Amino acid sequence: MVPEGWIYTALSKVMEFKNGLNFTKSDQGEEIKIVGVSNFKDYSELRSTEHLAVVRVAQSIRDGELLKDGDLLFVRSNGNKDLIGRCLFFPEVRERIAYSGFTIRGRVNDTNLLPEYLSNVARSPIMKQQISRNGGGTNISNLSQQILGDISVALPPLLEQRRITQILSTWDQAITATERLLENSQQRKKGLMQQLLTGKKRLPGFEGEWRTVELGSLGSTYSGLSGKTKEDFGVGEPFVTYMGVFSDGAIKTDRFDYVRLSEGESQHKVQYGDILFTTSSETPEEVGMASVLLEDLPYDLYLNSFCFGFRPNSLEELVPEYAKFLFRGEEMRRRISALAQGATRYNLSKKQLVKLDVLLPGKAEQAAISQILTTSDMEISAVKHRLVYLREEKKALMQQLLTGKRRVQVDTEAA
Image 1: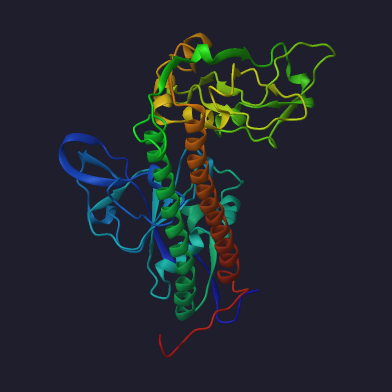
Image 2: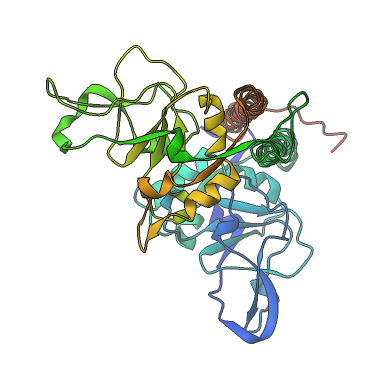
């Protein structure tokens, strides 16, 4: 049912669409900035143009092929189907900017429709659902002008559009501020890790030289599960998955899968303090990602076959909480990545890994460093939770405001 004073209309009635160009690069010709699919992040507006690709193109770029204030840009085609239909809004364009052939530009041509209002509609569940429905499925492979034009939107009067936009803008500002806080917190932690894990910055009260030791002298490696078929998985004993190792510096004990073991079967078990490494990846930068088990579990735990474990001889020499950060630090990641071998798939050798030299402070200093970095992690986690809350609350508010289920007060005098 249409709210009082609102109208339903197809986007083709209030917008004009244009596909982007497939630019031909050249050594001569105009140099121009281009918006591509890689510029469509989680945010809804293009906040800066400094990261846009600058290319010299052979063809002449006409004014009609440039972005203008109030334009909306949609992802038309991409290997990641979740990105198709994602919208980027350009409230103000201060330079010549073109857009790639994998996008569709939408431009409002109705004076009774605010582009800012439509940008909110474009990134709402209402729009996503219609794109899927008009495209014939939940995961369409290409967006077209026809699909976009056939989308129906409920439009309130202009003054109500403006008020709704103002309300949602307040939430956008809070989300943006929280995103920046998260980025700053992550950069601050990165800087701390670079300084504290290398000894470039010492904590008050600690003196003396750090010692350099070969990793292999601190412990030994073991393999993950062996001799298993797909029929063995889904029930039985818990084991750490590849993603459980890859995704975090500490093993999450609520995310195990299960494997069936025969009575008396010999498989290596994971225990507190063990450092687990991924053995392969599609890129050398992601080989050898490490995760540490920081809990003493009351049950047996196993490791998937695409990872291997490293068990320290002494938790006095290599404190588990410190190892969590050490092997995820920039310096150690660079050195482990350099050990990757392969062409289309990269692998890490246990024998090569244990030959790496490790720079270690004493136990007390390891504990102090890990405590500081753990506090930093807690701060980042709190900001992430705040960001999730803001996004979910705004999503719920959009569902109410953009459908007219919740009406807003319009100050006609101020308008």
